[in-house]
Length: 192
Image (cartoon, rainbow, N blue to C red; front, side, top):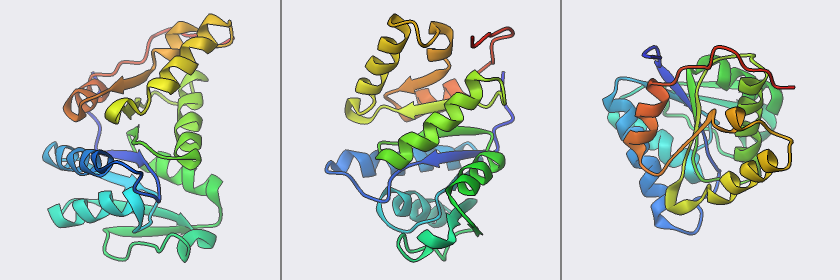
């Protein structure tokens, strides 16, 4: 059992999306993370879902660390009210720093950047570079197409079922957080 989750990396967008449920789920996630005594690390912006999660954690008085590349600091309007804002040189450093500071990661609904962050962390799990749990909050079925694509990869012989199963997908916040906290990396996995 992985009870050592002190901080969760949240991958999310600099847009709000077109459904109020995305924002509501982001707020609920942060509230539940805070209630469990954990902090968050995220992309450092104050717009879109990024701004929503940061503002909520600040409102709750919890730990909120942002990581943002210099080139995006002005575009994404770096959040100045958080616990700590770390400026890095590029996106590679952003992802590495966020993941290094976290004990688990969750993707909320988002765009290409969110997918890239999630898939890099998920790939690192498959390759055995870490044993940190990775999950998605399947708000309004947002990640159902991704689940279908991953199953298609399995069915086509490009991904093993046990690796697909490493990506935790839940519709409810507390179910997702419970699954992350109870995650155990399988003892023997061969990715090839």
